[in-house]
Length: 460
Ligand SMILES: C[S@@+](CC[C@H](N)C(=O)[O-])C[C@H]1O[C@@H](n2cnc3c(N)ncnc32)[C@H](O)[C@@H]1O
Image (cartoon, rainbow, N blue to C red; front, side, top):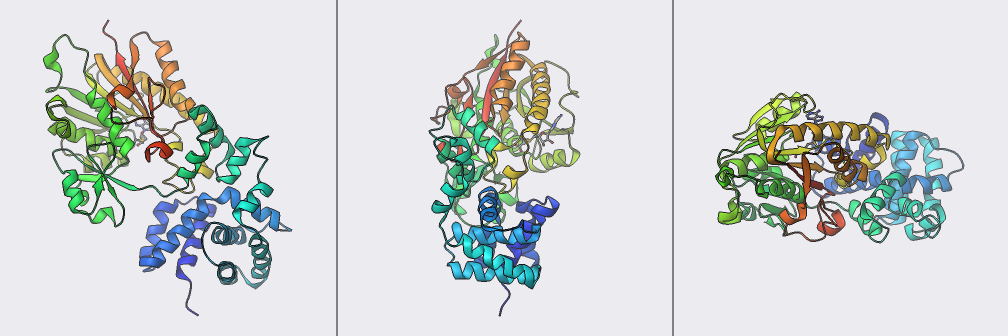
């Protein structure tokens, strides 16, 4: 019988994530390449590994209900893989059970295979719709607990999303969007590439950003513009928050100061997604915007505390100055920048679609720790900008403690800055919330849940 390479590859990824804290999105492509797994087998291995990792919480609850003892970690990982096939994929039950039992026999041993067979048969006796009411808390008395199991998210994350959304109504849609594979979005860096060039390579124009294009199939790395860093893979909300910063008119007595000669800072730039777009606009202007757009002629300084991440920024930008620097201990003089991008280190709860295992790794204690760093960085960002200039505070997390609360706390402590209505600088996008900040959502916009606050430093 031929070896089931796709399932073995998926199992090895799940084991490595469980046992060694590996990152599935880094490990899986390497395994597929090393083992020569391509085409449909590669697609199957990807769905098996990513789908299983996303659904861990739900599958574990069902496995526990079907087992008379706690399975060893390697058997549990195989059962998770089997549960995913039985409950969420259209794999016929006999094939899902048979292939998983074969896998356990191959990777663990014959005794464990017997146990796996018994557990999988019990799992197969019900559909996911039948299992959820059995293993999840009651939807009426504990809606958050229910959604956490039904949509395979940790409870604290569901709670945080509910707080950020301001209620339960959209939660199921948001959680479902988190479980769907995101569309690959490209950015055509202005002056260096164009959406038209990306269309010729098979992409279709984006919905909101004038520089975005969606790639529905194929490897973005094979596109010439991407290989040459003239274009890149970049979520559309990431593009829009960078664009919004460049669109804010500066508060100037001398209107001529807007445009040529501006100095921009990207304080947490690695690996360089936003810096790549800011660098292109700084140099060539907001080419899609016509005469009202930023005309170009600005200079970007991009910094990151980690040398290897600063190096990635250097590799992707053309004209920017790039330094390794700690934003909390600035290597630049205060009050010299016209525009500052602070894309702060955060929990990344807004990008759970991209890293299947990330939701199970994050720990709520990280929120408080990151909050302290976010406050310090926002303070130094406001010190770095000149009066009349503007800071963009961005997180790839909708968690209130990383977004509105950070901005509110920092502004309450200093009297020299005020929040602008960020939505006014994103007129092409609806549904960004009650303001003054802008909050993107996967289920509303098809983007990561990116947060943007625009803050003006007041003139004395
Ligand atoms: C959310 S990521 C930035 C993503 C980036 N702006 C992009 O679009 O590709 C946050 C970055 O902040 C950096 N960072 C963390 N602490 C920092 C500090 N004290 N000073 C400067 N950079 C820091 C991290 O190394 C990480 O690269």
